[in-house]
Image 1 (cartoon, one colour):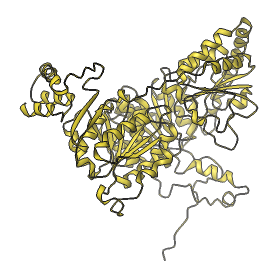
Image 2 (cartoon, one colour):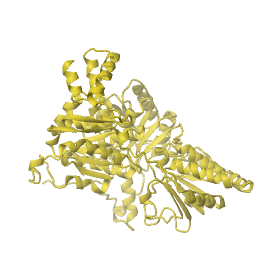
Image 3 (cartoon, helix red, strand yellow):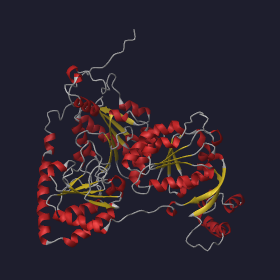
Image 4 (tube, helix red, strand yellow):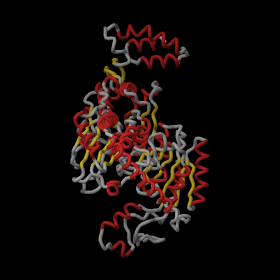
Length: 627
């Protein structure tokens, strides 16, 4: 007890740490709090500043590793995702007496980073992912790229393996300008120049990552800093967070409102900023106010209820022929040289990411804003100028869009009349259909299955229905890890990971975390023993393709031998099975349900029919002459 009091008086441990350690000695929580209240004036004195509590800003003395841990706690971090790094020993030591931080050991840096991303995307809470020096960093950079494209506020850290006094000598696991390697795919990257700068560097990393538009950041420092004694400030995140929620320019709001009420065929595009600001309900209100169709180009989340009669799918520019388009929070990724919104269409762009506005698409009305506030202001402006005539036109337009949506929904059963619907191997449409019939109504679908069919059967709804966290950036191997992170964030909801066989083998180690942490995730592998997407893109890229003519495809067939994903899963401690027919699939899903109710993850290796030009039952494979 006396030693603990001395540590607290010298500011070597935090108030929270002091209470925690007192409790471990057998002191009741109430008694511990009483002790700390009596000691706090002696520790911090009377500064006259009643707005700053000792928990907001305090001086800490200890090792750099301990200061690192203290600042993570002050930054609101609960989970640290990391792959073992020998030079982080002092940080690991600090975790022993800081139960506020839980360390999640991941067998590989890529799925580990994906796990951290999934946790952040599903919880909205901060996390950090750690790697060993440059060798671990390069393994994690694929998911860093995903975080950059998906605008996820994930903080990365790895040390520089050379000690500060030996920097620049081409040491073991050392590379010059390590922090600069990540420059193009981070919002901010920094090398702490001294050990006492570790907390400041971490604070800035979280501040920048969590200031909209979100994105990953990277912090590093020399390996010897975590063992050095430091005296430094620990500051709570709330004291450095700019809390940036921006309202749009009122004059631009008025222009946008006028343009929309005068439009004959307005169209609303929605995107991930709606999900991140919990503003889907406001997008629904805007669409219903004007009776306008809603579309969602490529995004990570489902941002609008897909069963809503005004939702018209993802390719509405062709079907709706709009004269005015308003974007609410979509990043608008381009897949060709043509702009997503053609030049002849008037365009209103509402998003917080001002840096990307006007880069490709010309903008008639820019609305730089938090989309939640922006939609509120725009709806109010429209309601202020709506007339009975305009309301009648909006109602007529809504009826027309509703009729279009109903016709589209009636086409869905046509898919089930495919002659191979009940066949083996499974059609990807049939596989998705059965999963959609099986999934809970509030299930979260973590989707890395690319362009596989049948996704419309889920009818995602961010306002209380099934949620979608999609494959977006292009780097594969994150599904098993991301699904584990999502389950950590949403333990009461069913989590189903969908992945192709090619994507799965990039990152199966997330299954080990599912088993170790008892995270009951269902993983379904669409296993066609091929890179199906690349196959079809490659053969469509070359006119009069010799590959098509000869049936010799060099870049896509994954058979001979076929990979058994259920065996791979069992090697990581996850039960699994292979299915080939619809009946086998239904039985496997029932077993998966029972397993997850017992707190166990489960994997289904679903044999899926290859589609596209040129596939044979036994595709050609190259041979190597070893004679």
